[in-house]
Length: 127
Ligand SMILES: [Zn+2]
Image 1: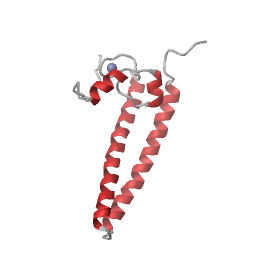
Image 2: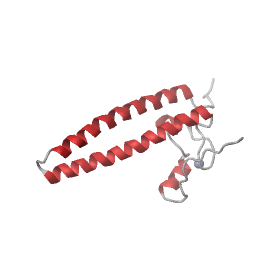
Image 3: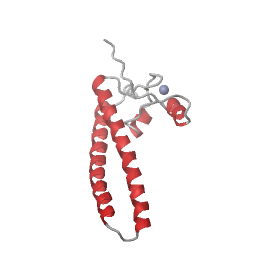
């Protein structure tokens, strides 16, 4: 009875893998589009603008992909679900919505506002 105290890792892992596969598929398709558009010379400016959007979306997806991989890595290391900044547990609701979340909501907000330096996920080796 009662809500489980630990996040459902199995389910989150499945979600992460699904999202990862999804992104990889999308990235592959979009790389094709970028090349295709580059080859065409009609409506130059329009095409260039479209390509720019595609490329920036591509960068976003690449960043997301990195976050997903990092999350899967943290699962293997048994530190998944901890905020990388304050080390408090990230809320389960947040993890369900954003399985690759690296920070708790408070830290994420601080990060978004540039209130703390986002250091790369420094995995502290405790040996
Ligand atoms: Zn935090």
